[in-house]
Length: 231
Image (cartoon, rainbow, N blue to C red; front, top):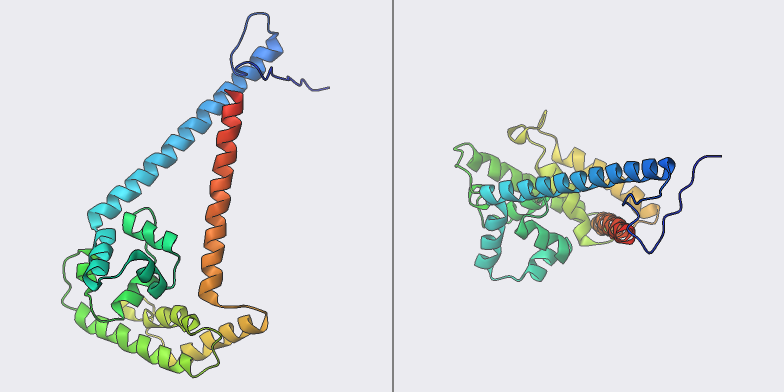
């Protein structure tokens, strides 16, 4: 029968005490190593998070987003509603704690009231003006074609339109796709989703992200509680 050590709940379970057997000491030694490894992994993850925030701050994407919102006189709640994301997610974009999806940047640029260089704080590219106009034209065309269909929610056209708008060689695509053809393909996927009981792609994606984040927070709280019980 394998050795099973039952720690005393009234003591620090990872402290080797006089009178313990060799098996007990070995068990505690292994647990001390595991705790040390967990602590190093957590420190490494925190360091990586800090580095991501620092790099985003240097690039000033989050700062550019805050300035853009301030120039329009919108609150974070209003900006989140316009972009079709949760307020929590948008606050993370502005603080630099979360990566800003390229689809949201395209959605902002499609308004035509901000330049990508001002939004990202990067050096201007003389080719971008033509590319910017092409992306906006493709986005508007895709939105017009998608709006003809029986959309469950108008916002459901946003994600496909943003995807189609960015499918140009100037932005790294293998080839510039045909907007009508791509709209037909995207509507087929969307219509199939509706028939399967879907109630809005953007809403579903945001719900899944929120659930994933909540699960991660719950796991971390559980780990913290277990560590406190062992201390």
